[in-house]
Amino acid sequence: MPWDDGDARVLGRRVRRLREDRAMSQEALARRAGCSKNHVQLIEAAGRAAEAPPRGARPINLRLSTLYGLADALGVQPWELVRDPGTDA
Image 1 (cartoon, rainbow, N blue to C red):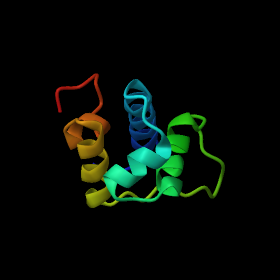
Image 2: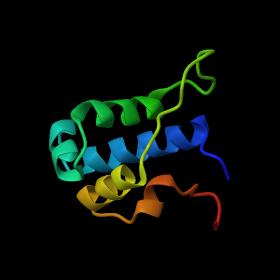
Image 3: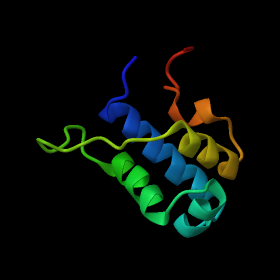
Image 4: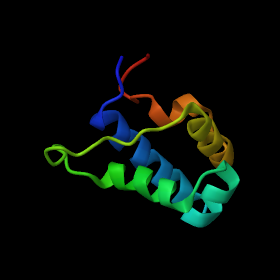
């Protein structure tokens, strides 16, 4: 299953919700996850994006190490950040 804008929106929304639930700043999350504050901002911005991205817009490019770092910093499993809650997959 390829990564698409819908997946990026799910990830961005979950990262932001979990970060805010933990009263954590973007900077603190980035430091704990081993990525830049800018990367956290881009991930969360994808979660706020409109359903149809602007023409020519590029989806975020997320490394597995970043996904695992975010999950660890937020105290969840990596699949919890990207799994569609409406499926059993």
